[in-house]
Length: 352
Image (cartoon, rainbow, N blue to C red; front, top):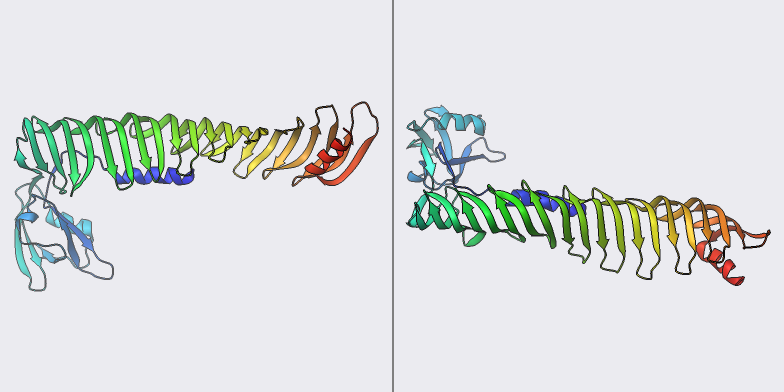
């Protein structure tokens, strides 16, 4: 369960908020490599002032407007480079200390082909992603697809430059198909991630409320869901035929009914180690144990009531018990020490 929560958190990083982008800047992404005092060009945005120079990724920026970059942080260097639109910047680059001039400007994508105002066209974003589809008033609007390289990472409806309506969002092994509102998942949707499938209602980008979760191992959960895990009331059907119906907290069972394929079942409390606390187990032969549990075994005061009225009462520890087995209509009983449940049942069976 916890691994699914982790996957959902990662999923939020895998799927950026696609939207038409623009800002004022140089278009340079800089990096300080470990063990080196020199700042390097990591990448250059499309259609930016830096893209219109002969700068290349990997080159070292020695100085900005004559100010040496050695010893400065990336934010400090960015402050030297960037400014209002129209600001002229001189970069000293490489071992030859050549000068590269650029002018700070608004960075936007560009229309590659077609009608990117009111019609159909292809638009390349500043990060290199590409939109192909319908436009209205210069914005993505209608049906379209966003590509990164040759991979379609979103296909569906847009409104005013944002994902809005029904669409399919994909990244690697993760795929979401459902509704969006103002660029985020909102409404009914199905997410396939890490071999698991979640289907239900999304609110403000997060799964919330009733969900059906089909796990990669064949288990299936139906019920309340919060922060990436079962939380509240829900039913888990296991691939091995077992079933749990009851309350969950952060992906763990807390109280409810657990049923085995042969028809035996337990009703009571749980923790992350299994049956713990007070609970009752119903045997296939009609007998019933009521009492304490710990680490998924009978533990503490408890009694086993048999179908004919016979009762064993005693102290249980790690599944074994010491106590008295009394038969219906008899004052005497059989004392048992450190006996397993099967031994207690056998003593009762011998009197049948």
